[in-house]
Image (tube, rainbow, N blue to C red):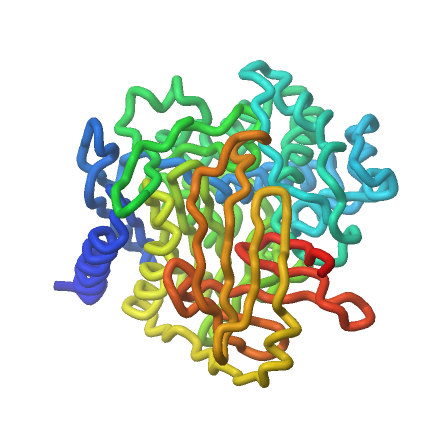
Length: 456
């Protein structure tokens, strides 16, 4: 048995154990190890109507789609039709945001590095028509500005409505048509779709929410059409490896057609802006991380009951995708990607020594932090911090009731205002407190989002 086969079997054993522990119904995993592709699935697509999961089962990959949006945009940059540093109003003159000064200055580079600074978790169903993106962009003035433009990284889904709409205006086609022509067809991703009507003839995973250790079907199944540039791609582990092979390459398609220049590929994977939580910088949409001396280029995604991971290690020509059909999949793929890096590449998880702080320093972090969808209460728990997170609802649409029960757990302090989850469901989750110019704690950044500290 080849070493990679042995490692892959060990990884499958770990996946099986974590699926049972976390009650995740189905998982597909794909690994690109040099020239070799390793694919497998476990479990079922749907607890009510089960089909076996394999490497061709379709899952919602969620926000990995953002990297596809950026790939299209960079093709348009090379064609001279877009500029990352020109204000977006050059393409969308009617753009309105809550802060007029931000609307005047925001660029595609701000959008692609998540430094726009407004509340980004805005989802609304603006219909199935070709005007869906135009209609939701017209509503973005409802998103409050929570941080200065360009100053802090905070995950901003809403920025990709704008990016998708720019692509439509520049090309005169729908976003989906452009992606099909510029990415999916040349990369031979024949089992990747945006519309349920296209995916329905395939084996498709349904999302699940795990409540009291019992998975239940998550509804609605798909995102609204307007969210396609944000996270709407439906794909298989096999097709995701085709996408990984391209982004590990020199910009050519399988048939040799050049899609992007090598310099553009390198630019997408090079630091463009600040990072946060567990990665060091943003590329053009890609998250960049120094992991045990290796550079990881990654993303991932979350939709209603479906979670995915997608990591590239360019120096080893290695990649992994993990697709899951439960909200607890985020815990599973956090464990599995680390285990895979260890097995295949010998990359041990970096040690992060805890830094003991005196009670007075810990007490400085205590308080309530809020954004539109989440409230986190921080309190002191011995030599650690305890975070109580409450889902305020509003996903996938504003006004929707909460879908997740409150969760809480302890976080150890790492120094420099950084903390690390030590209890499930937060084990291994990084978060950090951010200060203003005079040293006051003004934000908690957790799961990539800025939560504003409330006055005491």
